[in-house]
Length: 637
Image 1: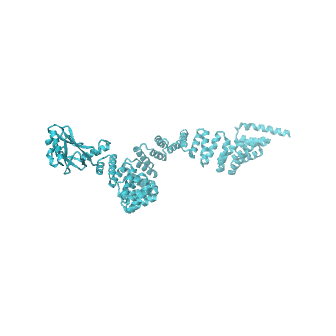
Image 2: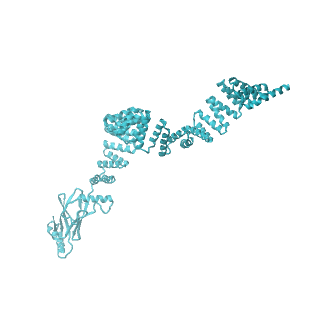
Image 3: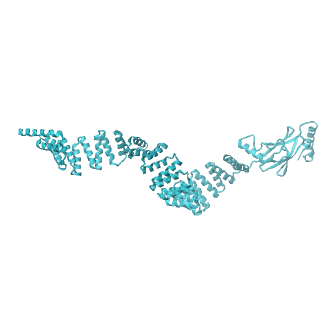
């Protein structure tokens, strides 16, 4: 290459005028000392020469390599003339091999950073004489879809990759391969909607592309558009009836929709096409498990483990389902296998504990819960299970500590609070049980059993009003235990509200007329001076036990309060017939005779009472009184 004065190329000029003009310019430069003129550059690009003037532009792409071979100016031998390719090389790039890719890179990076000053036509070849600019040729940088694709592939930043591929598609909308790359990037970046759009666009270009339909189905699955999964998978299978991936995608969609029967059918179709697919076997097992067909689920899980023995997650699933089935021996065997493979799997130790518990092996159950807690010390469920195991082993204090830990970790756990309350109740620590029960009924106000226990606790704490309130709630909520009516009646009685207690006793007596209940009801009637009702109850008691002397005595007492002395005397005598050794009944009979004016009979009854109980001072005083009354009675006659 060379730097050449313009007059040496007169034979190449178009017309005599141009030649004369260059002679004049050269004369002006050499003789008059004016600035030289620039006429042309000779460049070699990819092995081909190009002659460019200031009226031309130089087009370059990333594949191009070029070199400036000659510069045509007024300067003889080119002394002081330099060529600077803007954006490349140094201050003088004459004779140097330059690469278009460097200009493309600068243009792309400027475009990414939003530098408006650098555009595809912003670079220039500058021709200078010493420090003065004497000519320039603009460079047109060609950016192709392949450039954006190249930059996308070279970047590790997903956002940048997406940006480049979008530009590539904008330049070539029909390139399905680039769209596929962009869709995959969108999916990996969690931009599922954008991925769906790209796959849909590809299907417009290539309607029967089964691979794209499969990828679109995965996008629909991720977006929760399960009906669309089924639709596109059905279309895929029509295109390719042996596409087991489409069948699997359809099965997954049916699973998410809760239609386990259709999911199972689709999984079975997929296995017909490709029987040796452990992933589908596993999903089929899960579907069977959801449908309650546990035996079939076990069969699928075992098949997977035969094909892939190291599939730990399948071993876990098999162990768990065997536990669910109550097959404790197998559950223990497989959970032991799981903890052997995964020694830090707290859930496996906890489930192993449950399996041992199912077999009644409480010691082993507790040991495994403790191992689970070592690995996962803040899991309230494991502590709860430990508490129930302690309860089964009659280790109530340790159970209490376990349940307290549950409440510490999960303050509003209703089951743990209830178990803790029940244990306090069982040990008769009613003051500690009552606040716990109150906490439960605040969140679960319709628990009749809890209100019943709370009523009992308050009764034991002598808080009769709260006791009555909770017994009433228990009964209103449908509690069927007759004891609640009795307890409520007793609570009313302890409050001095016998009138309110009577309906409870009556209801209890109508459902379960035991001697105990009838006695309590009779006593309540007596307190309320309902003597006829009391007598009726005593007669029922006599029917239940005709030889029970006390029932006759109680009826006699009621007759006496009613003012029926004849019946009173009759029932006292019947009482003494079955218990002739009862000094108190003799004394009461004596009083009844005395009231009726039958002093001789009264004297005999008092005398019999005294003989049976010489310490009865009041009866002793009655004997001489009756003798005097008899004498007085005879004198009156």
